[in-house]
Image 1 (cartoon, rainbow, N blue to C red):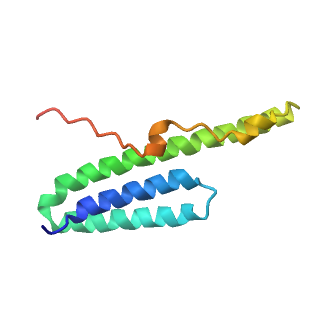
Image 2 (image 1 turned 90 degrees about the horizontal axis):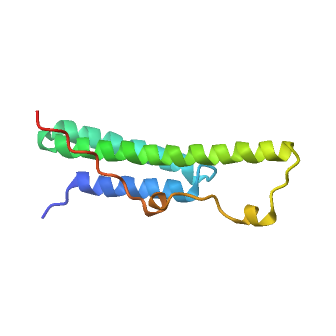
Image 3 (image 1 turned 90 degrees about the vertical axis):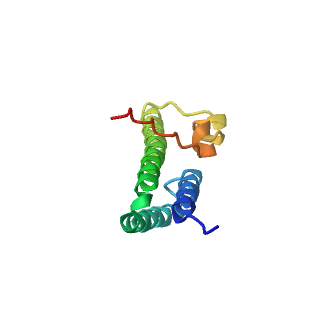
Length: 125
């Protein structure tokens, strides 16, 4: 059977998202991943406008992408807050223990796994 471009691009977006979370915003990969993600989104928009039957799939994908974005943004916000907190503690003269420095930032398990929540089904009109 011919491959479904929407499904392929859904998988691609999920891989991009996981890569971004894995590498973090300080990585040189970050900017590239952002560009790639917007490129995939543009391709999908073009595809959705040309194929009426794909509108539903595209809306679903768009919702998932937004959810992925929220997860990523939440993760980044949390990292930013931790950085600010560490700076405040240093100013107050409280040195963090060496073990704390070795321990990586705690991230919710679903961010690593890349689980994107399914959007709730809208009630029938």
